[in-house]
Image 1 (cartoon, rainbow, N blue to C red):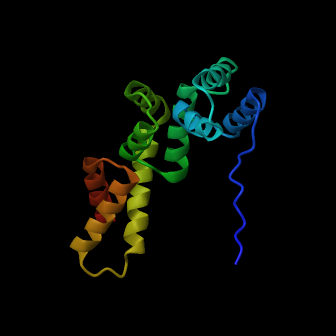
Image 2 (cartoon, rainbow, N blue to C red; image 1 turned 45 degrees about the horizontal axis):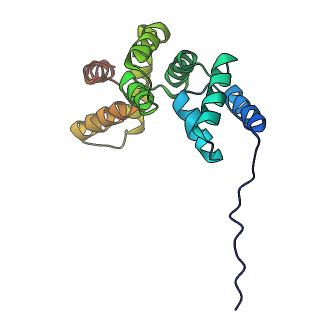
Image 3 (tube, rainbow, N blue to C red; image 1 turned 135 degrees about the horizontal axis):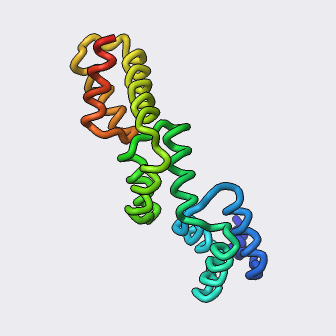
Length: 166
């Protein structure tokens, strides 16, 4: 029996190549500092090189935390129909400042659209649970789903009342 040693060597990049790779990474979609720093760890850089790359990305507009937060909130509310709790949790995980999050919520979330998203999700889940006979269990499943999506409990209860009337 023979064993062949694995080649554990990584490809070595120059600083300019890494700058180009990171610029493309940021161009593909808006990124936050946390995501970029996480990606930079793959390259085993010395701190000075990492700082230089981050500085260049910020200086040339490839990396902008505020723009990232706004596009993240707008995208997740419009596409994935997430609520504020889920958004805040995801952004905090990415080490985004609370004031920046609040500003994005105020500017990017239309209260009427937010409410309509919630009611639409509640109705969709209600319809999907048509075979559930116990209404108490059914309502708890709907509430759990909407809480998972990140909606506030007082709004969830209001939405449940709306769909029960229909």
